[in-house]
Image (cartoon, rainbow, N blue to C red):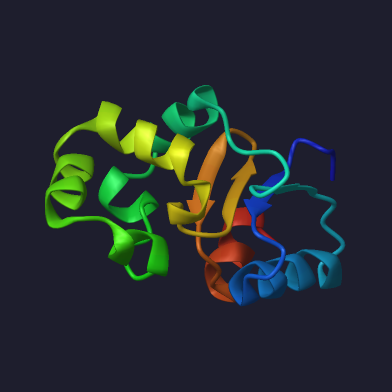
Length: 120
């Protein structure tokens, strides 16, 4: 596999750890980008949103989301521009991991979906 595969996340996240382990076990080379060290750009987020609805890309179960006011949450869900700004300001609000392979975007980790995604 080429380095066209990228996985974005936070190193401490258990779901990211499982996804990275799965990639290693299946001999898939992926560039890992840690949100804490290299936050995603607006261009990255816009590309992800072209395939994943903002309602799914925003992790509404995490502490970052719960710390927002009700009006901030509603605004983020009603406007793509506001959602992008929120994700730029708080990258940890993005559901993890974000996997990009051959211009396809997938979020979260599910071994079955990964098998299909990589057609193993």
